[in-house]
Length: 108
Length: 427
Image (cartoon, rainbow over all chains, first blue to last red; front, side, top):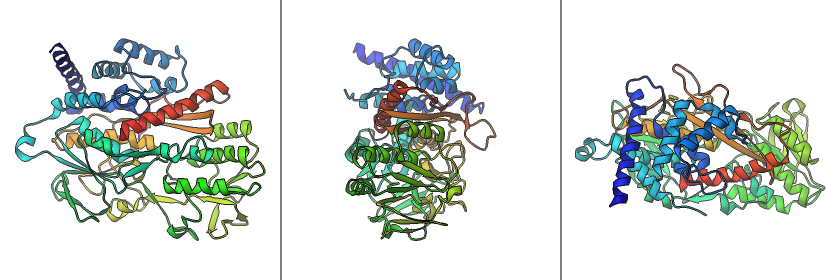
């Protein structure tokens, strides 16, 4: 019972994120892509919902705070990497936060 | 350890479905989306339409029971992966709620509705599928070329569609006598997987170096330069003395092929090979032409934000067949395009518009089993832009002079990328 409540809470939270982002599209401001378009850009390397089956880092085990921090460090060059240093530069602070919050919640 | 992602997939689907599910589907039946093609573009699109909105009825039509990927197929020639490792089935699709039909599409009748709804897809098996939106990801076919048509594919493999052609080229390499040469002929632009011919060159060179040391690989190129050229040349200089690359200006352009004698003819030369791998000039797959989705370039023009055809409303085209200006023709590009397209389609059938597109492309190439490098890009579509544009300062190539450990890590990541994208598409 406890578990079910938790899951519903997460679903609502994720839906709220999706809504807040798509609201831009609906008003034709289009500042950010749909949440799922944005986060699914990560899934081609890190696996659907950040669940990796191989050597590449799992995202789903990271907290939103840690994931966002890592992305910002890759972007600034504070953290070394083979490819994430190049990819992280493609994302704004707002986008990084949307991605990190989504991934933290989706696999709990 | 391989983890089950099904539970998480369904949870995502449910969560996002709550945003867009409308009572409309209850009284008028669920919107119907048909997807043709089970490759990187089509299979991703089918799965992600369901992920965006589980209330949509999704049917995936693919002629084959399995799909062999071009990405990683070159490692089969290098001898460190098998064909079996790059073949994927469609059984998991049912778990995502996607209906899979194995049949050959023979005809598409575009819809006459205001948004292109009400179209039909007919198959060789005699079935008809009506749709509200159609997604077509048909891939490529080959242009006719002097001396090289379908009848010659069994003698001189192109191996630019993976599967039996991959196996054939591998067998020919195994049967090659030490001292005979392999000739690879890359096509002119545009073509599927721009770095592919040069990764193949590397993998063949690796095999020859280890098993046929008197043989070499000669590349007769229709171009002056190629994708990741600096990194390939650096890697070739480090590992190989058995590669000879001939640019177009050095009489590299092949004008005619004689498949029986495995000979490639250039303007001034006659090049007889032990194994000839001719990669023909390319065009959108036949289905794209038959359905009237191509323009005079031979590729399918689309609206970049939604991948909807500029020719037929209600039909979306993605992957190698589409003119996704700014993005390369690659499996990873098709995968991220499919997500943008899936979002657009899932919203459109509910009368909504989707958010701004954002896509990526990540492409690894092997030079040896322990030396790989990459190119990556993050794309956006600014208002009014005529092509997908790289986000300023992002993406780019692996650095030159990166050192052995860096290259080794990228070789490991290349396989890590592959098994995750395969899971994202067919898993």
